[in-house]
Length: 549
Image (cartoon, rainbow, N blue to C red; front, side, top):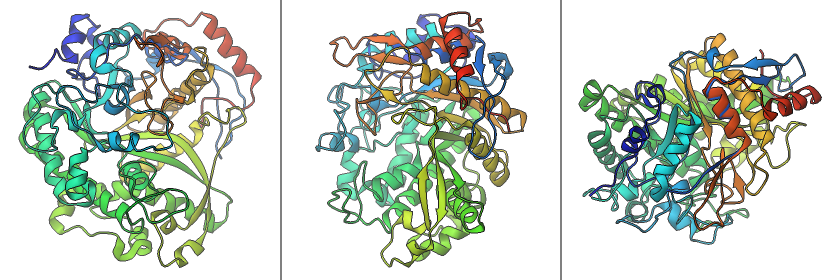
């Protein structure tokens, strides 16, 4: 029989009603056996918790054109956002659950990849052991004042064979149905996302989740980072199923980078639309939930003001965002993709186009990095070219003087531009920022000031986005706690809570960012050492934080 679910645990610790009201929370709070019992310790990112709890935070203004300039610091407060705007944190099943071989779970493609000698450190066999330690983690969320928690279901735990019987010791779904971890058995049987068979199997899996957990889950996301999934897994081959054309960079044993990224993405769109149609037809009226899709968005800035570079930046946006949002909004891929990819880009039937169009109630958006883009038409001359060559550009990651080399550059000004472009191109669809966070070495200090600065900057930029009319509904920090990172393993850390991977009890400790976030959420004044430290850094750096357009 199923273990007590996460929802039961949340109510048992008497979380404040406004925190876990499913009418307000974007991510579901339904996890049976999926979370672990490790002690978590907050980081500087816990200072986000301060933000979420309503504690004022010091921020700075920024200006356009991918540059940040000093200006007068001001106080950031939870009450600048509407009551129904949710603040939360995110994780995913493979990255935190552990218990890889318990209770009938079978491998996903990530299990296979992590055990194949890839370049990343470790695997998710134990991870944060949230499968066993979920009660403790729920209490940490409540103590922080977290309003929402985004997490994923492990398909290979709930339905170990990918289809058919439900595992009687499975977990309750966690809002995101698929976070890169399709069952390995389906990859072996018909090559996963390269086969149309996956559409039917994914829909059947989604049906189980909607039926069993939909009375408590009000926000469903079908696929996480669908565009990145197709590129990293089927073009460059740096993540499972590690398919690509022969390359000097990655040792792929099979694949075709010229066609497979397009085919995998095509089937993801069809699977998403099929699951969304099922939900709307069978469950939505009764369960009163919403369903969406998640993509990652990069900021693209022309390298120069030349017409060619400006067009190249727009082309990059079309191949990144338009790849999924054009079919969902207009029923087909962007014209430039049709032109550059030609017959390698699959076609939708009229019936499929109608099914895909308007198949989201909201868009889940992840944002981390931005790039300068330069036109490079020479890429189109290659006869056997891949998805990236089809964009006909060169890119260079945008860095910032105030950001360490191993951290994510703080570019809220560019982030605002992304939100504005989506608003203008696709109608003002509701958006949840599902992932946004700062990377640090895993064993670095709990005084993660850089993460606090990062959170201040992006949360502050959302104030400007809302004032300019963007329909943003919520913000989730990646990640709630240190996890097995899909790029970097255990060497990198994004968590608000530090997890000691060398401790048998996987002790959790709050970072400074956790305190900050908690104070913000609880609407507490920020009169601690954090306030003084932030103010000192804000006033001493020319290129920092918050954004004004």
